[in-house]
Amino acid sequence: MKKIVVLTAVLLILGTGMVQAETFRAILNASQSSIFAGVDAKRYVTKGYMKYGGNGIFVDTDTKKYGLLNIRLMVGSETLLENLVCEVGLKGVLGSAEERDNDGSIGAVAFSGVAAYRLPQSITPIPIQFSLEMSGSPSVLTFLDAKNYFDVKTGIDVYIVENASLQFSYHYYSIDIKKWDFKDDRILFGIALEF
Image (cartoon, rainbow, N blue to C red):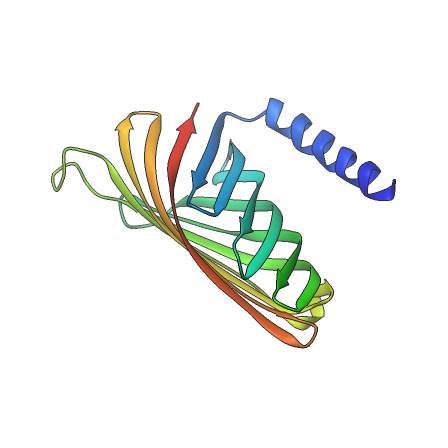
């Protein structure tokens, strides 16, 4: 019951904030045994923007099964280089993992950074963006059965229209859980919609 109340409160807070947002981005990526989905809202402020939202990944294979939910708050802006955007912020992680005879619950508050570069139109007429996101949490900011948390996500967005892109992404997770080191990586394909 406590989890339902907390989840409802978080969704209400996010929903209230998203009503005031200026842009939204919805993502759905998948592979043979995994699915990744998320939504972000962006609100422009005096110096840059604030982005908040959440995403999750669920993987079910013969040898491992895990699910991770993330809620994040980021601030960002364009840098001195044209077409390069950087973001920094915090990400809350909650989930569980099973691998052979091991299982555990994961909780972390992670520091997160993102860099994205869109190729200039002088190089390619089709807008293409490369991105890198890294998040990490030391043991003092992890809880439940987790001791350390680290993830990396790289991606390529090929914009087929102005507000939609095809995504190719690589996800890597390294989490110390109880007495085993959980590691996994995934290549996913999907679509992102911006409105």
